[in-house]
Image (cartoon, rainbow, N blue to C red; front, top):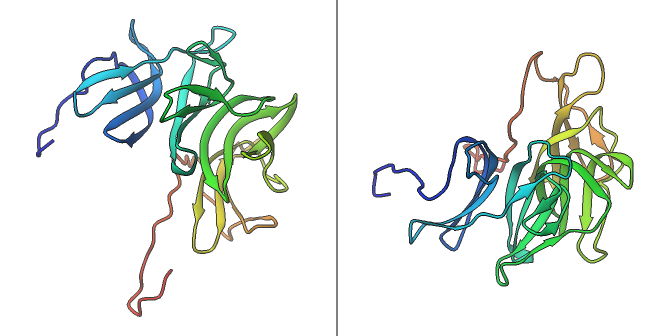
Length: 228
């Protein structure tokens, strides 16, 4: 603030921050925090410099919960969180939960999807989720939520070598980039590109031991002003 760093006060932030998002001067922070009064999701008022909301994020079996991604969906007027949890506050909500920015109420998205969500993106008015998930007891490598039908299903043909982790969408080419870990003995990191009909494999892969923490589209302009 004005060139000076300061800590975010009012919450126990011991642990790891996985994702943050800002809307109307409210900072939404998700992660895995280990302090005695910590919550894996917190909402902080940047104007008042105070903690506004700390919903209790839990798993049903008592294992460590985490919020891996926080994403603002302007078209839905909602903040969506994904991770490893089975409830947020008093609401039963597995791995993906939506927070309405007007009513300040939590709601679940569909039913049947369980496991761990690592990333979410709004693509063609549908919410695409990556992670180690299953839908109605069937493994699912990458999922898609239809807001009109209020139901989850597979994204495309879902022909991936293993659970997906991160994704990014290119508005120009309308291609979806997905990374994850292969199920074979190498457990190597992969990248695939969805062209609208199938997943394509880049000509060169990632080196051994590679880890992808995030994917982002970066617009580049060449000297002749054409998009790259």
